[in-house]
Image 1: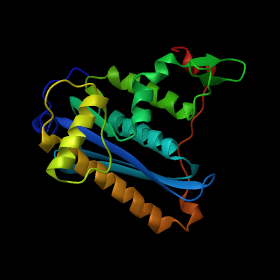
Image 2 (image 1 turned 90 degrees about the horizontal axis):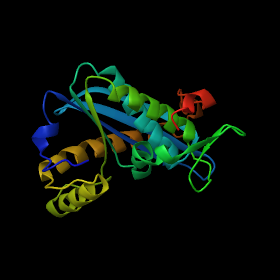
Image 3 (image 1 turned 120 degrees about the horizontal axis):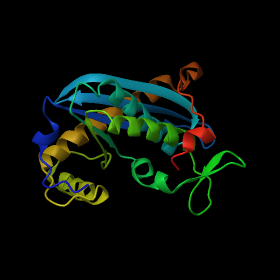
Image 4 (image 1 turned 30 degrees about the horizontal axis):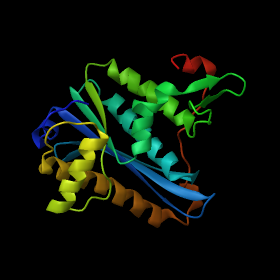
Length: 226
Protein backbone atom coordinates (compact mmCIF):
# COMPACT_ATOMS: atom_id res chain seq x y z
CA UNK A 1 0.00 0.00 0.00
CA UNK A 2 3.05 2.22 -0.08
CA UNK A 3 2.75 3.24 3.58
CA UNK A 4 6.04 4.35 5.12
CA UNK A 5 7.07 3.75 8.74
CA UNK A 6 3.81 2.63 10.33
CA UNK A 7 3.57 3.98 13.87
CA UNK A 8 1.07 3.13 16.57
CA UNK A 9 -0.03 6.76 16.82
CA UNK A 10 -1.37 6.60 13.23
CA UNK A 11 -3.91 3.98 14.27
CA UNK A 12 -4.45 4.52 17.98
CA UNK A 13 -6.10 7.96 18.06
CA UNK A 14 -9.56 9.50 18.39
CA UNK A 15 -9.97 10.00 14.62
CA UNK A 16 -9.36 6.37 13.64
CA UNK A 17 -11.75 3.44 13.89
CA UNK A 18 -10.01 0.06 13.87
CA UNK A 19 -12.15 -3.01 13.18
CA UNK A 20 -10.80 -6.49 13.86
CA UNK A 21 -12.42 -9.66 12.52
CA UNK A 22 -11.68 -13.33 13.10
CA UNK A 23 -13.43 -16.69 13.19
CA UNK A 24 -13.23 -20.07 14.90
CA UNK A 25 -14.66 -23.46 13.94
CA UNK A 26 -15.20 -26.81 15.66
CA UNK A 27 -16.60 -30.16 14.62
CA UNK A 28 -16.03 -32.74 11.92
CA UNK A 29 -15.57 -32.26 8.18
CA UNK A 30 -18.89 -31.64 6.49
CA UNK A 31 -20.49 -30.35 9.68
CA UNK A 32 -18.17 -27.71 11.08
CA UNK A 33 -19.79 -25.16 13.35
CA UNK A 34 -18.31 -21.71 13.48
CA UNK A 35 -18.42 -18.36 15.14
CA UNK A 36 -17.19 -15.23 13.40
CA UNK A 37 -16.64 -12.07 15.35
CA UNK A 38 -15.89 -8.39 14.90
CA UNK A 39 -14.81 -5.76 17.39
CA UNK A 40 -14.58 -2.04 16.57
CA UNK A 41 -12.29 0.05 18.74
CA UNK A 42 -11.19 3.66 19.03
CA UNK A 43 -7.83 3.73 20.77
CA UNK A 44 -8.44 1.09 23.46
CA UNK A 45 -12.19 1.53 23.79
CA UNK A 46 -14.72 -0.88 22.26
CA UNK A 47 -17.55 1.01 20.57
CA UNK A 48 -19.22 -1.89 18.74
CA UNK A 49 -18.94 -5.66 18.31
CA UNK A 50 -20.73 -8.53 16.61
CA UNK A 51 -20.54 -12.32 17.04
CA UNK A 52 -22.58 -14.76 15.00
CA UNK A 53 -22.85 -18.53 14.87
CA UNK A 54 -23.03 -20.56 11.67
CA UNK A 55 -23.45 -24.26 10.86
CA UNK A 56 -22.01 -26.30 7.98
CA UNK A 57 -19.19 -23.84 7.51
CA UNK A 58 -15.46 -23.89 6.78
CA UNK A 59 -12.64 -21.75 8.11
CA UNK A 60 -12.54 -19.60 4.95
CA UNK A 61 -16.32 -19.29 4.88
CA UNK A 62 -16.40 -18.02 8.45
CA UNK A 63 -13.42 -15.70 7.91
CA UNK A 64 -14.91 -13.91 4.90
CA UNK A 65 -18.23 -13.61 6.73
CA UNK A 66 -16.28 -11.94 9.53
CA UNK A 67 -14.88 -9.40 7.09
CA UNK A 68 -18.37 -8.88 5.67
CA UNK A 69 -19.57 -8.10 9.21
CA UNK A 70 -16.61 -5.73 9.67
CA UNK A 71 -17.56 -3.86 6.50
CA UNK A 72 -21.12 -3.62 7.79
CA UNK A 73 -19.86 -1.91 10.96
CA UNK A 74 -17.65 0.37 8.85
CA UNK A 75 -20.76 1.46 6.93
CA UNK A 76 -22.43 2.33 10.22
CA UNK A 77 -19.59 4.68 11.24
CA UNK A 78 -18.38 5.94 7.85
CA UNK A 79 -19.49 9.52 8.55
CA UNK A 80 -18.11 9.62 12.09
CA UNK A 81 -14.44 8.75 11.52
CA UNK A 82 -12.13 10.06 8.78
CA UNK A 83 -10.01 6.88 8.96
CA UNK A 84 -11.33 3.31 9.16
CA UNK A 85 -9.07 0.24 9.12
CA UNK A 86 -10.19 -3.37 8.88
CA UNK A 87 -7.85 -6.15 10.02
CA UNK A 88 -8.12 -9.90 9.39
CA UNK A 89 -5.69 -12.80 9.72
CA UNK A 90 -7.26 -14.50 6.68
CA UNK A 91 -4.88 -13.77 3.81
CA UNK A 92 -7.09 -15.45 1.20
CA UNK A 93 -10.06 -13.27 2.22
CA UNK A 94 -8.09 -10.02 2.19
CA UNK A 95 -6.43 -10.79 -1.14
CA UNK A 96 -9.75 -11.98 -2.51
CA UNK A 97 -11.29 -8.55 -1.94
CA UNK A 98 -8.24 -6.50 -2.88
CA UNK A 99 -7.04 -8.29 -6.02
CA UNK A 100 -8.36 -11.77 -6.86
CA UNK A 101 -11.92 -10.61 -7.39
CA UNK A 102 -10.86 -8.32 -10.23
CA UNK A 103 -9.92 -11.37 -12.30
CA UNK A 104 -13.10 -13.37 -11.71
CA UNK A 105 -15.59 -13.80 -14.55
CA UNK A 106 -19.32 -14.40 -14.57
CA UNK A 107 -20.68 -17.43 -16.46
CA UNK A 108 -24.32 -16.80 -17.47
CA UNK A 109 -24.87 -20.51 -18.12
CA UNK A 110 -24.81 -21.40 -14.43
CA UNK A 111 -24.85 -17.96 -12.82
CA UNK A 112 -21.51 -18.47 -11.07
CA UNK A 113 -18.14 -16.75 -10.92
CA UNK A 114 -14.95 -18.44 -12.08
CA UNK A 115 -11.24 -17.79 -11.65
CA UNK A 116 -8.86 -17.32 -14.56
CA UNK A 117 -8.08 -21.04 -14.18
CA UNK A 118 -11.79 -21.73 -14.80
CA UNK A 119 -12.41 -22.94 -11.25
CA UNK A 120 -15.65 -21.98 -9.52
CA UNK A 121 -15.02 -19.34 -6.86
CA UNK A 122 -15.72 -20.64 -3.37
CA UNK A 123 -17.86 -18.40 -1.12
CA UNK A 124 -18.45 -16.13 -4.10
CA UNK A 125 -21.76 -14.73 -2.85
CA UNK A 126 -20.11 -13.38 0.29
CA UNK A 127 -17.18 -11.94 -1.67
CA UNK A 128 -19.56 -10.21 -4.07
CA UNK A 129 -21.57 -8.55 -1.33
CA UNK A 130 -18.41 -7.61 0.59
CA UNK A 131 -16.88 -6.06 -2.51
CA UNK A 132 -20.02 -4.07 -3.16
CA UNK A 133 -19.97 -2.66 0.36
CA UNK A 134 -16.25 -1.90 0.07
CA UNK A 135 -16.83 0.10 -3.12
CA UNK A 136 -19.57 2.08 -1.38
CA UNK A 137 -17.24 2.79 1.53
CA UNK A 138 -14.53 4.01 -0.84
CA UNK A 139 -16.99 6.62 -2.10
CA UNK A 140 -17.68 7.83 1.45
CA UNK A 141 -15.74 10.72 3.09
CA UNK A 142 -13.69 8.29 5.19
CA UNK A 143 -10.45 6.61 4.12
CA UNK A 144 -10.96 2.84 4.27
CA UNK A 145 -8.02 0.38 4.35
CA UNK A 146 -7.91 -3.42 4.57
CA UNK A 147 -4.93 -5.13 6.18
CA UNK A 148 -3.87 -8.72 6.62
CA UNK A 149 -2.33 -9.30 10.02
CA UNK A 150 -0.63 -12.40 11.43
CA UNK A 151 -2.89 -14.36 13.75
CA UNK A 152 -2.21 -15.89 17.16
CA UNK A 153 0.76 -13.63 17.92
CA UNK A 154 1.91 -13.88 21.52
CA UNK A 155 3.44 -10.89 23.25
CA UNK A 156 7.22 -10.81 23.31
CA UNK A 157 9.95 -9.10 21.31
CA UNK A 158 10.81 -11.97 18.95
CA UNK A 159 7.16 -12.75 18.23
CA UNK A 160 6.39 -9.11 17.46
CA UNK A 161 9.44 -8.72 15.21
CA UNK A 162 8.40 -11.79 13.21
CA UNK A 163 4.81 -10.55 13.02
CA UNK A 164 5.99 -7.12 11.86
CA UNK A 165 8.01 -8.71 9.06
CA UNK A 166 4.97 -10.74 7.94
CA UNK A 167 2.74 -7.67 8.11
CA UNK A 168 5.19 -5.70 5.97
CA UNK A 169 5.39 -8.42 3.30
CA UNK A 170 1.71 -9.33 3.03
CA UNK A 171 0.59 -5.69 2.88
CA UNK A 172 3.44 -4.64 0.58
CA UNK A 173 4.76 -1.97 2.93
CA UNK A 174 8.16 -0.34 2.72
CA UNK A 175 9.54 1.18 5.89
CA UNK A 176 9.56 0.33 9.57
CA UNK A 177 6.74 -1.26 11.53
CA UNK A 178 6.41 0.04 15.09
CA UNK A 179 6.35 -2.93 17.49
CA UNK A 180 3.85 -1.08 19.66
CA UNK A 181 1.55 -1.08 16.63
CA UNK A 182 2.03 -4.85 16.23
CA UNK A 183 1.30 -5.34 19.92
CA UNK A 184 -1.85 -3.24 19.58
CA UNK A 185 -3.38 -5.05 16.60
CA UNK A 186 -2.31 -8.49 17.87
CA UNK A 187 -3.98 -7.84 21.21
CA UNK A 188 -7.30 -7.11 19.53
CA UNK A 189 -7.00 -9.98 17.04
CA UNK A 190 -6.44 -12.34 19.97
CA UNK A 191 -9.39 -10.78 21.78
CA UNK A 192 -11.78 -11.60 18.91
CA UNK A 193 -10.26 -15.05 18.46
CA UNK A 194 -10.56 -15.95 22.14
CA UNK A 195 -14.11 -14.59 22.37
CA UNK A 196 -15.32 -16.53 19.33
CA UNK A 197 -13.69 -19.72 20.63
CA UNK A 198 -15.31 -19.22 24.02
CA UNK A 199 -18.73 -18.77 22.43
CA UNK A 200 -18.28 -21.96 20.41
CA UNK A 201 -17.33 -24.00 23.47
CA UNK A 202 -20.23 -22.55 25.44
CA UNK A 203 -22.81 -23.25 22.71
CA UNK A 204 -21.41 -26.32 20.97
CA UNK A 205 -24.33 -28.53 22.07
CA UNK A 206 -27.05 -26.00 21.37
CA UNK A 207 -27.92 -26.48 17.71
CA UNK A 208 -30.46 -23.66 17.80
CA UNK A 209 -27.66 -21.17 18.37
CA UNK A 210 -26.00 -22.03 15.06
CA UNK A 211 -28.07 -19.91 12.72
CA UNK A 212 -26.29 -17.50 10.40
CA UNK A 213 -28.66 -14.56 9.82
CA UNK A 214 -26.79 -13.28 6.75
CA UNK A 215 -28.17 -14.39 3.38
CA UNK A 216 -26.19 -13.86 0.17
CA UNK A 217 -27.20 -14.19 -3.48
CA UNK A 218 -25.40 -13.70 -6.77
CA UNK A 219 -27.29 -12.28 -9.73
CA UNK A 220 -26.01 -11.42 -13.18
CA UNK A 221 -27.06 -7.78 -12.82
CA UNK A 222 -25.00 -7.49 -9.64
CA UNK A 223 -21.76 -8.51 -11.33
CA UNK A 224 -21.60 -6.03 -14.19
CA UNK A 225 -18.31 -4.68 -12.86
CA UNK A 226 -16.54 -8.01 -13.52
